[in-house]
Image (cartoon, rainbow, N blue to C red):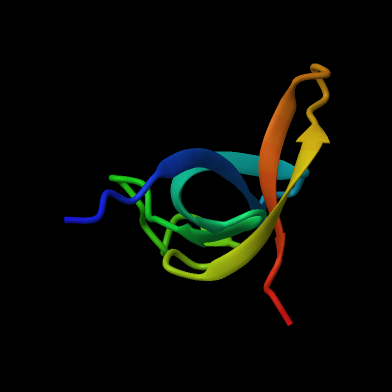
Length: 78
């Protein structure tokens, strides 16, 4: 049985009025490549994620307004 490594990653929320990111989990596929997982309370009627759950994304480390490094989903692979 293969154990899939998961990590915390942030996804940009659209239509929030101010820049907003939310944490979720992702499966590590390879270096900088992740598959997003939905949060337990994911509701597409309540939040519009830039990349939907189960999307494959490239992640990059950014600094938050509090100067904390976080992994952010930034784009889909080419």
